[in-house]
Amino acid sequence: MSSLAVVAIIAGVISLGCWVASLITGDTSWVDRIWSIAPVIYLWVFAAYSHFDARVTVMAVLVTVWGIRLTFNFARRGGYTGTEDYRWAVLRSRMSKWQFWLFNLFFIVIYQNLLLVLITLPGYTAQRDPGGFGVLDVVLAVAFLAFLAGEATADQQQWEFHARKTAGQTSTRFCTTGLFHYSRHPNYFFEQAQWWVIYLFGAVAAGAILQPTIVGAVLLTLLFVGSTKFTESLTLSKYPEYADYQHTTSAQIPLPAKRRRTAAA
Image (cartoon, rainbow, N blue to C red; front, side):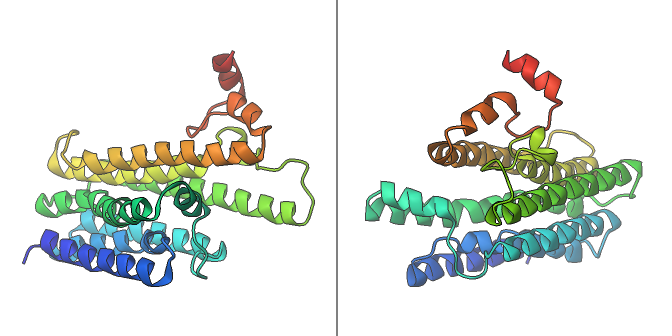
C-alpha cells in the first residue's frame, strides 16, 4: 500500500469521525480540533515511507512544531472544551436546517479535511524524489521557523490584548498594536506563509518551481481570504469603528504604516 493510500484512509477515518461527532453533539467545530493534528500525521507517514529521508523528515519535524504550537494556542482559547466556533452558529442561523446539514458535510467536514491532505502533499513529492539536503532546504527551514515565530508572536499579542480587555484595561475594542498595527490578521498571513514554504520544499525536491501540489497552498490562501471577509463582516457589525481600522491597515500582509496610508489615499 502506498503512502498516499495510507494518508487517504486516515483522512477518511478522521472525516467520518468529525461528521459523526458533529451529528451526535450538534457541534460543528470538530475539524477545527484536528486541524493542527492531522497534517502532522500525514507528514510522518510520508517521512516513514521515505525511510526518513533528510528533507522529508525535516518537513515532518517543522510541521510537528507548527502543530504543537497551534494546538497549544487553540487549547488555551478553550477549543477543546466543547466551545463551537461562533461563525458556524451565525451561518446556522442564516440557513435552513437541511442547508446547514449539507454545508457541514461538504464544506466543513469533507472539503476542509481534503484541504488538510492537499497542503501536505509536497511531503509526498519529496518522498518520491529523494535527494541531498542542500542550501535551499536550509533557507526554507529558516523561513518556516521565522514565519512560525511571527504567528506565535501575533497569537500571543492577541491573547494578551483580550486579557487586558477582559480586565477593562484597554481603550480599544480590538487589537491594533504590535503586529496588528501592520496587519489586521498577521497570524493568518504567517499561517499561510508556512504552508507555502512546505510547498517549496516539494518543488525543490522535484527540481521545478511549478508543481501540481500548489493547489493545496492556493486553496488554503483562498480559504483564508474568504474567512477574513466573513469574520470582518461580523466584527464590523459589532464595532463600527472597525471600518477605520480596515481603511488604514493591510488585511493580511504586514505593511509599513506609511505605505499603507499612501495606498489608502
